[in-house]
Image (cartoon, rainbow, N blue to C red; front, side, top):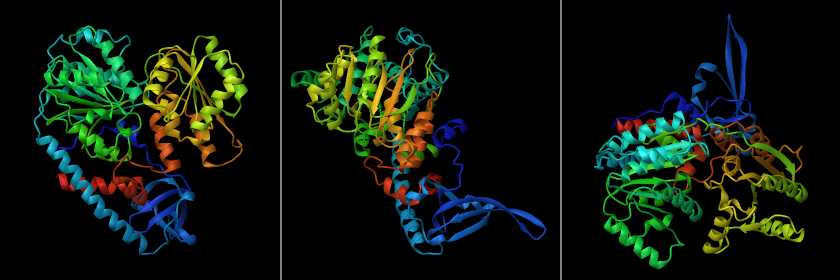
Length: 530
């Protein structure tokens, strides 16, 4: 098996430089979890040498020459939130060896799946010159350098008879969807059916409308399948897929219905890949043998990054900002309904719309009541996960179509919604959100040439040095276009690894740390694949 390595640029964007700062948590292969104490110079006879200090539990301390510091790996979370290992204890060695056995099995499974994919025969999607000209001309913007590079890589993959397994990693609003549209056009216009999977009903509807609009001038039928699809429409869709009359279907997990059959399925596109569990992704990939797969994400999970680093998945990074995109002005303020109303008034006065995002349904209800009591001079609707699917979808669509001024909701708006009219967002009790989540939310505004504004409202003391304040301060400073990768890494460092969507990788990573996890997994995969 030939591993296709990430470029240095893509690797640095995805992983950072792993530089250690005093106080960072590190893992030594032989001695376990410690706190990095920094470096100092010392005299050893006639020479000076740089020593590196590592602090363990009960003030155990190890000092090593800097040249052997590569035995330590960044853990990926603050040391003060962790239980450090005791120096010269056997506990760490036992835990490490157990993880090595588990990771070896994980590596074997990953390599086996990749080798099975490479043995499969995919339909080559060769697009004749000129066939895509009209479709491409309908894109109203100029493609960025990264979009062009990613599109060329996808087209090259589609022309091969080895199934494509490529991921588009790009900051919110950096053009992943346009690359996916062109991949879908290449497949559909040459007789292959296409599936686009999205994690939520609202995002699926938005993709359906986008794809339907772009394919309107072609003879390709685009359909939608979700829990909201009524039985008659569903039956018509199933018949169209089975006969080949439907060329593109956009849907949610409803696409996993065993009753669905295709005539010539060639391409699967998975948006917000990190929101799908491993079992669901496996089922989607198994919709047919030899399926080309294109995934998209702004915040890839660590397991995905590990497989990308060793070449088990190809990655295209979109890190070039679209033209005329302005950074979103981001401020941290105390929770204050009057300030919120003032921000809304400013936005609606220029013809825009506003998102109000809350961490809890009870907050949504309280702000809804507050706006109603004050007889606010704007229209508003509410949306949250306890609403009936049809009611929530109707509410979201009314906002997306511009019928109302303000949407008060929980975080259901963080997934891929694209509304150029909405350019103010207020996040209520913002300290309850993680950095990556705030970044996803901020990506919902500032998607046009209009200056956008985000207010992070919090009830905590701004002088507090809690993790929440660290998160908010870090986020407010990271306003440059394309900060998503840096924010995702910072969020991992502050909050730890989290849940890796239905896999066993989270436990392995939390016990080994991100650096050593990547190192051991990469070694196993390289050894098995060689």
